[in-house]
Image (cartoon, rainbow, N blue to C red; front, side):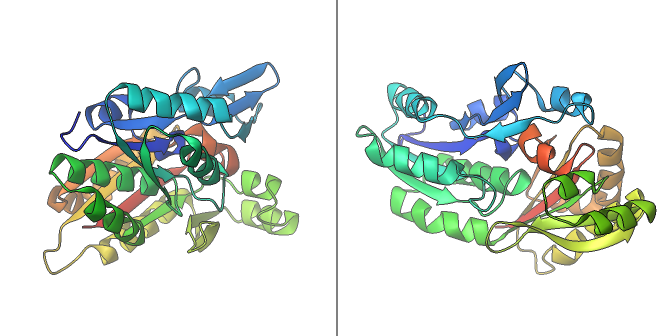
Length: 285
């Protein structure tokens, strides 16, 4: 436990491996994955890989943790000696996780809490939580941290390449005609998060590897040329070969990054975008 007795709380859409979270005093509240046979806790009793393997034959739904689960998580943090907690949650444009944690923390008397909407998810949410934990280890005090989090959120950008338009169409994010036309032409959208935290298409490229090329090009343009430090992160949803290709395009940028994170995209986001999602993010420090 850090000397300031400050914990970081996030949810299972952050894509931070459990061992990395434990090393950094990061607590992860699992979202729910629901199949006909029952309900699972994301990243606890079902893995992202298991979810992707069941697609497209079985596509689960997702839901928030219940209030009792959130309270138990806060009690766990308190029981380990922490006195304060900063929560960074999945975009409120996609989920009610932020409001659930915010309201639960307000009612919990034993921790001073600050709760932030990441306006992002996956790599974006995870990078904010990890950098926050790093600053806590370095000795940053509570007022500094509360000023820092909005800056980190503002300076973090993520892009994802989708392998299929099917799941966006099922979720009502694109029409059936656009889905049919895009599928026939092998259109691979590049998506990101808008300022309001909603998923938004920022590019359309024909062909899987061309879309990955486009993502890498976007990231290269965002790498500071003045020596400013930055973090890079990559992740995949059941397609490690495509992740290897993306990393090969960004070898120099990864080598020059102050920090580099790699992970697997959780099933919560994958349910809405489909399997074989590939993502890359950059955070200016």
